[in-house]
Length: 336
Image (cartoon, rainbow, N blue to C red):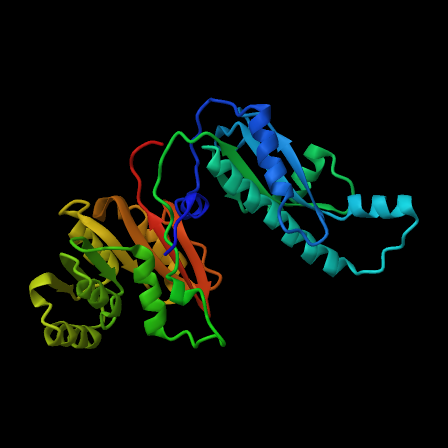
């Protein structure tokens, strides 16, 4: 892969949620916003709000930007010139979303180049009424996304990303088979050699066996159905993974209580229950998770498209493809 200062800055970008008290100067703020304005807009159908109230801003960030889809400003300019709007609202909305997104991304890159970090707040549209009132927004201005920004007080690793071959499809879109999705999950996890893995709802062991093929130290498989368990054991034997495998033929709660006696020794947890059970499983699993998953360990959860799951941890990966949603959650016990 080619490298230069701009590309290298973009490749190590990560979300920052802890900021220094240091306040960016007016010169820095101006440079970031002006860089944002140079994005390749369609119609400049976006505007920008700024709040410097660190005490109230999310994560106590010294800067909070709100990116708005803004057709009000365009309509005022056209009215002054005696022009008539002939496009439709859907087109204005779509172009406005594009423009606001491009403005934001240019600003993020410019901020990174100046030593600042940032974190997008994707819940902004669900707080639109509150934001409209707070900033006295006129009709036809919609708050799309917010961006907390400042000098970082932490240095987390970049979040996992899909491999290039799962992102760039040339000539035609491929069929998303199970093997392709599984490969993408493990590539997003990165190197896992030497880790200790727990595969709940293991079935015939697809995820755990893939982990063993990538060099994990041990995988504990939990499967309740005795007939499925027999197939799982046969698969492990056929691949000669018995020295690094343990199979527990029990329900997941009973198995977790047994495993918890050994302390939080697992680095990676695969959780793929029947989709209809996921909400129930999350509620029952959360109190037990700190007893089995190490600090900094990751739970990989597979569910349906509408899955909403955090397991009480920090989601570091969230992607949907087909009817499956994959969420990776990091377990943290230390205060941040």
